[in-house]
Length: 383
Picture 1: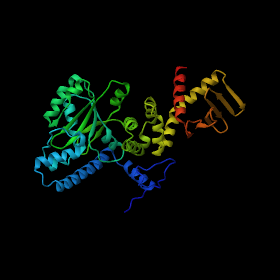
Picture 2 (picture 1 turned 90 degrees about the vertical axis):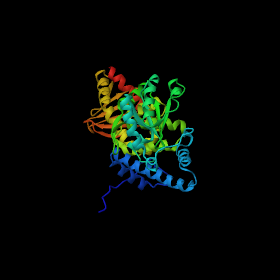
Picture 3 (picture 1 turned 30 degrees about the horizontal axis):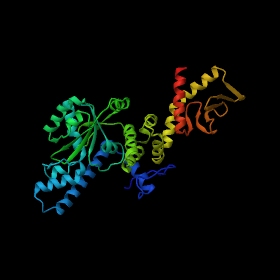
Picture 4 (picture 1 turned 60 degrees about the vertical axis):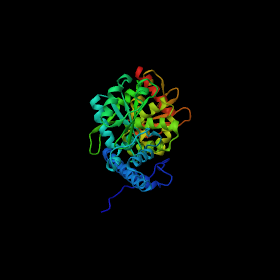
């Protein structure tokens, strides 16, 4: 029996993930992805990665059939790891271990980090897959909270578990910020970025989530909002289409489960407000983000109007209308329509309208409106 699907329409500004994907197909893909759990999306990606590795292994096996086993293993590592292939590294293991997917690597590293008591979270492509669109990924990115002088025990535990761990001294001395490790038996690579002490990094650790792996333990993954902000930061320097696609995939899949105000605050701190606005529009979640903003700002609007009224700073152009006139905005309360409206004095535009019960009737804030109302909220709280 064919399942009944909803009538899917693209919001204004919506963009498919790729130029050769139609709007209808893209909308259906993400409707179906929203029905899956993070674990199920990881399982889908694991199957993709295993299939890709198996296909590559078969093709390379035919192309380099003349090579003896150690030479073929080295050739495979060079092809799969490319510039990150360690010198003189010859994989052990077998064809069965070589097609291992990244989620199995996460499970093994999780146990090591628990043993040596190193806090961590998964970020990068695997995290993007968890919250968004399943795809293949070449390596694993993790952030670890460990002092440089405590890297020795971690490196020893990794080496004992079958990992090649070069560059420990460079990271310990601060010459590098990323420890790159390779699992010898599986040709799998992971990058461990040492966490800094910034407020934002501490927040990311506090907001990380435990996600069950397919056939494995629960592991720590960065929150989806932090992956969006991080991907926008990486994309700013690399101009990578992959980063942008991951951002859209997370927004399209998570939709109203995201904290848009949080993302706006941190995007602004990294000068990424415009990029975030573009992504929100292209993902078709602008109405959700605007509604969420309006719901959060409504108590501030009510309080600001009450303060203006108590200080005699409102006017009544008619018996059914009361107006509070601020520096940037005008608040209009109508007893007839039972509404409260925020109007921009800059361009005479309605920013948001509420029923007096608090229901959001409409909302269309710009990035500047968000920043200004954040400042207004701080002043109101201090009043």
